[in-house]
Image (cartoon, rainbow, N blue to C red; front, side, top):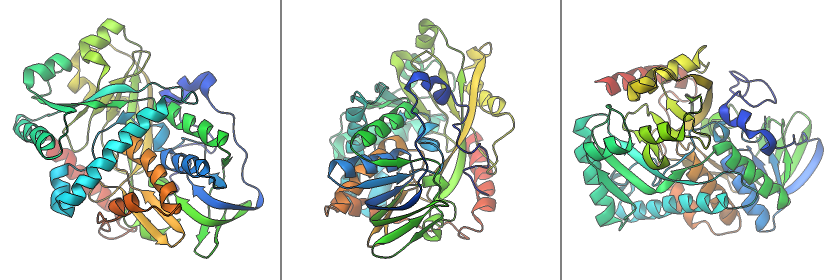
Length: 435
């Protein structure tokens, strides 16, 4: 199954709130790649990682070609919940057990840098999206609260991080007017942003920096050679370096990465616009929220006061026929007071996950790099990954090596059994969330 077209039309953005809302800020279509082309670096994928790579490479003086199989921001980068989370996708105590305290500290520093980078880039005149501060972690079980509060103290004491504080049940209920939660924490220097407008802003910046951008240019093969060769159905690109930024849409392009990065679907709805007063009565101070379920519920408000609510599980790669109904159910479990509110938009998307939920960074060959598997934490980390790509190709691979040293195991059964195992895993974790 080709996930680029399994649920979407060729050359068209999904009917998401973000795409419809883009309006005058949308980009004109870029041409498809044609003929024989040469460059210093060929970047495959037009999401956060690919565009950030192209931008930062061009700023260093490299001649860059970027190939996108659909439209820029077509994939998870333009469809996600817009949360710019602090830290890595795995918690620091888990990373300490996995890679040791010293490397865990380096991973924490990199994660902090990722949020700072998104905030800084959002200030560019090319980006038509504001960065809003604050993400609340909400515990859906009372037994989880003690761990959350212990983790707050661990970050404060071990990492000297003061951007987080614990929330008891009353304060969390004050900030998030839902009966579903028992406590949690707030990352005051994390935040949220319109993801499609952010990725389109990266595209404007990359174009201005001299990147040659091609849309509807699906890569059919990457040949490991020096220089490397990349082919589409209408073009052959010769490049000193190739960067793969395909995440959940890698397909069969590289089986080694596909064994470690699995595509999975997630879904989002947007309500009708609410009044500013009603918005404040649901989530104070325009923070974003993500809860403690394995199948995470995540939600925030758009700039025009719509609740954007994401979550629910997927038992295969085809989207449900009624996404709105599927996601409305958990929304009303969190906010039963929204039973009278209309859902205006509903959409799905495909992201890439790894076994340990940490990104997979790897040199596939001396001149071919792959960075993917951001596991729902890609607004910040995928953007920073592009900056890391540029410094790595320029000969400064310290941050790349820190990320690449995190072990990424193969999914059991490899590519062939990922689909059936995905169904079993999602059934198990959705059951666990209900217990």
